Length: 111
Length: 108
Image 1 (cartoon, rainbow over the protein chains, first blue to last red):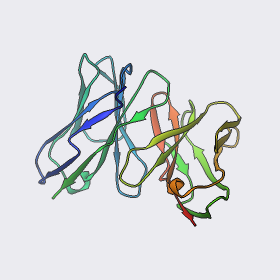
Image 2 (cartoon, rainbow over the protein chains, first blue to last red):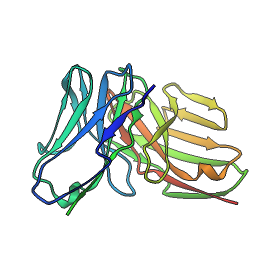
Image 3 (cartoon, chains in turn cyan, orange):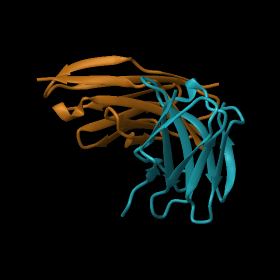
Image 4 (cartoon, each protein chain N blue to C red):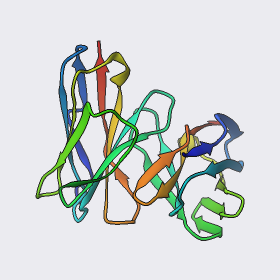
C-alpha cells in the first residue's frame, strides 16, 4: 500500500517565479492538507481540500493556491515567489477526522 | 488564535525515560496529536488523545488534560533511534496547529 507521495523532492526557483507542487494521497484517503515547515519550526497549515473544494485555509496570502482532482490528488501553487517561501512543503492525507499521514515533502529553495 | 508551547531541546541517556510537555491555548479543540520527525524526513504519527487520560502504545505513552490545556509524551527505554524532533499538534475542526517541536537527543 503506497503512502503519501509528493513531487518533486527538491526544487530551486528564482524570486518572482511560480511553482507547482504535487501530492498523491494514501490509498483510501479523500482529504489532502498542505503545510509549510521552515527550518527549526513546526509545520504551518496552508489549506485543506475535500471533495475538490478548499475546506479550510490558514494565514497564507492569495499567492498560495491549490486544487484537488477527482482522484483526490492535489496541487499547491505559489506565485510571485519570495525568499521567505523557502521551506519544506508537506502534504498530508486523511479520511475525515482521523490522523493525518504525511508525505516526504518537497524542499523548495528560492534564490 | 493558536498558542502551543513545548520545550526546545531535551537530552537523555539510552535506556532512560523522557517526558515532553506540551501546553496549548487554542480557539477550538478536536484532539491532540504527537508526531515524530527525524531530520530531513516527514512527520510520522505517534499518538492521539481526545479524552482526558493516558494512552499507551508500546514504549510511547501520551497523556491529556483538557481542563489544563496540557499534554505530555512519555518515551520509555530510550533507544538511539529515538533521537528526533517531537511535535505536539492540536486539531480544531480540520487543521492541525503544531508547536515548534522538541529535539530529543539520546546519548549512549
